[in-house]
Figure 1 (cartoon, one colour):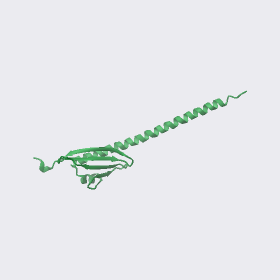
Figure 2 (cartoon, helix red, strand yellow):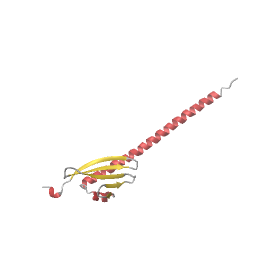
Figure 3 (cartoon, helix red, strand yellow):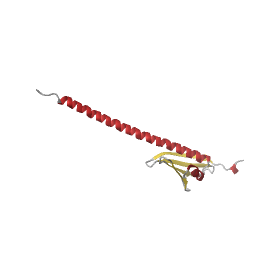
Figure 4 (spheres, helix red, strand yellow):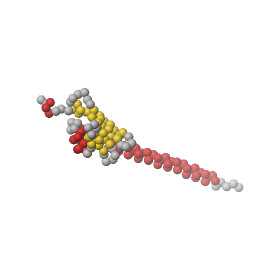
Length: 132
């Protein structure tokens, strides 16, 4: 008489294989979700950093040296560089405009891997002696 023991054993091996493949896919999905979450957190921090810098530029009417001192950055005469605690690098680059009363800058925030956020801003520059 033939034994039927190999059939249930093969069924169990197939079920273990299916379970292992499913577990591997779930772990890969969790890993991808974690990576996307960290990237989104970095992007959100980049947006906040860019917005804060834009507001400082507007309130100081484009005085990059004052902003560098206030925010702890560096102004080299060409562009403003700030570093955040989480390895984010912000660059604010002045943009020439056609109007003498309009200031403009391009802000980029990046991490070591890629560009996270960029923003172009403008503000009105009015000297006190120009007012009536």
